Structure formats: structure tokens, C-alpha cells
Image 1: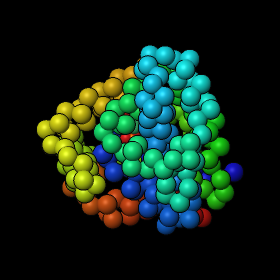
Image 2 (image 1 turned 135 degrees about the vertical axis):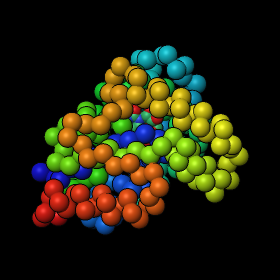
Image 3 (image 1 turned 120 degrees about the vertical axis):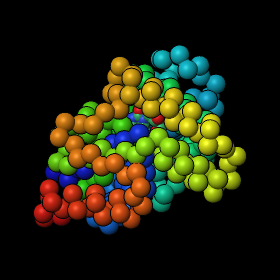
Image 4 (image 1 turned 180 degrees about the horizontal axis):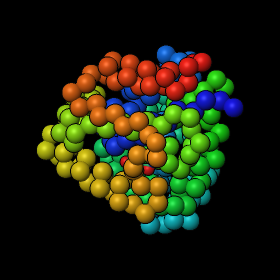
Length: 220
Ligand code: C5P
């Protein structure tokens, strides 16, 4: 059985960067489950599917032609790596992510991503729903202001025009939707190691996560 380490947390907590760096250090695969929800959100928008058309969204999630290759994401053979990173795609993702039928369609795909020697699975419900038997579970968080500041820098670097105020508002709204939804809400898994990264730089967080993984899995 491959090792599975889950990293869950709210948007902007840095889990994407941390998960991919920890996976690279261990030589493991990295599952960015948020990208899947973003892909369904984007594909639905492009296909003109209404956010409440559950059967159509379910079909889309089941049949979506999505490929992850060399750090890029393709939808119907079109590179959507940047398109899925916008705030608009994030919000679309968070809306369709509240639909249980869509989540169910993505379950098998996510579980099938685990391969030898191991997987770092990153998202909201990796430790609670998708990989409940994972050997190591981490909940990575940071204060809303710090998360908004990190997001601001990331988006500015990519040339997006955003304000701190709008980001803080969007983060609060997304946190609320993700933590209060009925299905697979964002919360730490039982026994998760809770790491608040406020005031820490990414190198420090990566080292803390690696140290925790090695403490739990000495053979790694
Ligand atoms: O992590 P990221 O910001 O890319 O995720 C986008 C949205 O997808 C989240 O706001 C959340 O609503 C949803 N999501 C989820 N379960 C996951 C990963 C992401 O519901 N495992």
C-alpha cells in the first residue's frame, strides 16, 4: 500500500506550495484536489451549465477530459493551468463543491491517484473523507489577513488586478461556504496535526511538515 499523507486547510493557507514541495522532497506524487473542483467549475461555465443543474454537473464531473502533466492542467486538450487559478474559478469551484453528487464523482479519481511509494493529498476533505485511513494527517492554517496577503502577492505577480479588501471579503465568504456546507465541510480530521503557519515562511512550513511525517513514518 502506498503511504498517504493528507494536508487540508482553508484557501490561502499555503497548502498547495507546501504539498508540492514536500512531495518533491520525498519523491512522492502530489494530488491537488482543489484543481479538480476548479476544473469542474470552469468546464461548467464554458459549457453554459447552470450552477443548479445537478445532473448535468454530475455528468460533467464523470466525463470531464482532464489531464495533469508536468505541472500543467489540460481540459479538452487546452492548457487551463492559469485559467483555473483566478478568483472567479475558485468561487465557481467552491459553489459546485457543495454538491454531493459532484463530490462523489470525483472520489474514485482521487483515490486512484495514490501510487507507490506515496502520495501527498491536499485539499479540504483529504483526511476526513477521501483518505480516512491516511497514516499522517495535517491541517494547515493561517490567519485570514495573512492568507489574503499571500493571495494578493501571488495574484499580483501573475498580473491580476485585485485589492486586499476584495480578497479579504472573498476569503471570508469562501471560508464560510467551505466550513458550513453539509457535505465534507472543511475541518481538521480526528488526530490531525494542526499547524498555524502565520508568521512562518514557506521553507519553515515545509521543514515542519517533513519533520512531522518522518516522526510518524521513520522509514520514509
Ligand atoms: O484549494 P483550492 O482553493 O484550489 O480549492 C477551490 C475550492 O474547491 C475550495 O474553495 C473548495 O470549495 C473546493 N474544494 C473542496 N474539496 C477539496 C478541495 C477543494 O471542496 N478537497
